[in-house]
Amino acid sequence: MSFIVTGYIKQYRYVIITFMTALCCVFYYYMDPAQYLIMPKCPVKLITTLDCPGCGFQRALHALLHGHFSEAIHYNLFLVLAIPITILWWVIFIITNHSKRNSVRTKLVNLNRYIIYFYICCYFIWFAIRNIY
Image 1 (tube, helix red, strand yellow):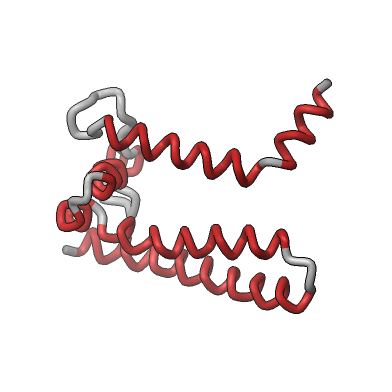
Image 2: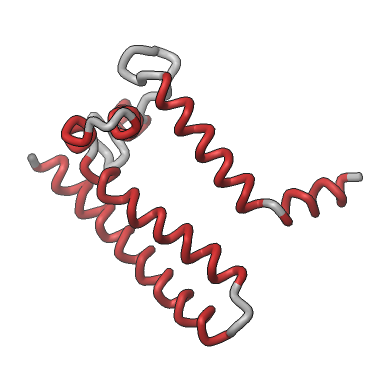
């Protein structure tokens, strides 16, 4: 029985991940993180009092979903810049896994690796800039 469930999840994992992401967006559309105490707090900020690159993520996502771009940039600029990169990465990841041609797959895997390196570098640069200013 567990083999059947595992095979089903493996077969539809991209659909499940996309659906769960959409469900989280609906949740953050209706739940304002600034007003509810049940929303998780940043452990880095609680321990070190430094703003990590993810601080303000929930409030920025809520503002973006309501179309308040300047407010979202105020809460977390990194999130606003990272969303297009993340969407591009997800599309490349799906195309790579469904590609039958090896040449296309190799090119997309290399591009995917560079996008991830760029994202990680931006993450640490944003961490430094955010705490200096």
